[in-house]
Amino acid sequence: MSATLSHIQEVYETNDSEEVNQFMRKGGWQLLGVFQRATECDGPSAAWALYVLGRGDTSRDLCDIESVDELARGDADDALQNGAVLLKVITRRDADEEYARFIIGRPRKAA
Image (cartoon, rainbow, N blue to C red; front, side, top):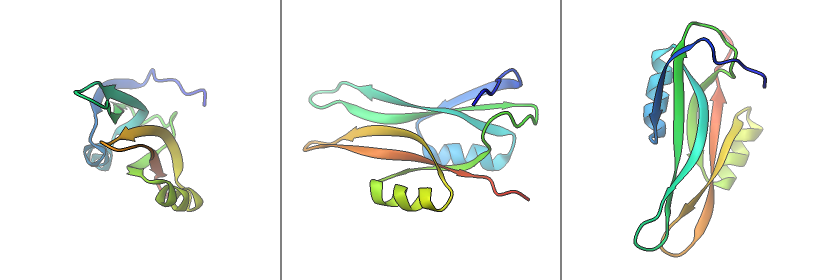
């Protein structure tokens, strides 16, 4: 995608997918990117997704995502087969294992 970000006038970062969805429901906000972040703790590192949102004029240079979800493989497969798009794959780690989580974007339906 050769999108320009010159129309973005305000940015916001969060690691909470529900907060991302609230911003996008307000209107005017676009999902600019999803990044994996990790923190080294006492033991295994903790990983999470960092969502970056932008707001500006009504230009639609970027994919118009209505909502995001963090899903396990099976649920991600179902969502992708139903029109969602894969935004990012991150790695989560608990006390016993490391596993993939899939950040899925659900495109806005055309009016």
